[in-house]
Image: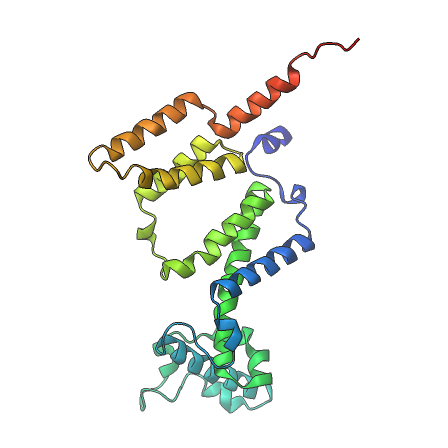
Length: 258
């Protein structure tokens, strides 16, 4: 049983060495990347809104409604909690807050911000920025536990938590068979267990289709030929080839010095 656990590809939680400082550094890094990615939003957190005046303004109002009623409920005014779902929209229909996203969980997160500032725009922007930071941190913790690799976990957090800002929408159809197959090929050519090998293979394979755009008819044929040649030359991936080469150099006998 012990040998099986040691031979598995996943590392045990006790072996990760995941200290609080690692999480803190990742949190700071993702926070700075989020500020840079959404700049200049951070310069006007209390007055500016990202994107348009549609959903951001509506969600700002929802957060303000939620926070106002939650604070009044905490102060002992139970009538505020009873009227929580009867928002002042779609009159005279009841429970109108439930007609859209009620954002109760997000309102609990920004409750101290609203209690201090009373600014719905500020509360929405804090929620908006925390979405990216916490998503990236969650991906970091997951990949760190599965792989034990800090660089892989950090990169996964950047891609999984921050890149979605540029996609604008996440849908299962985005990652169809082509992209799933491409990601598997990147791992195979880079070498399973080799972070830098997979990273290098990912960079090459991401650029290869653009480099082969000079021919439209033979582009996919040449792309497939390059992949087949890479798997034949590097059966264990680039990372495995580099490890074997390093071991051979280390085991090579050196002439004795007189």
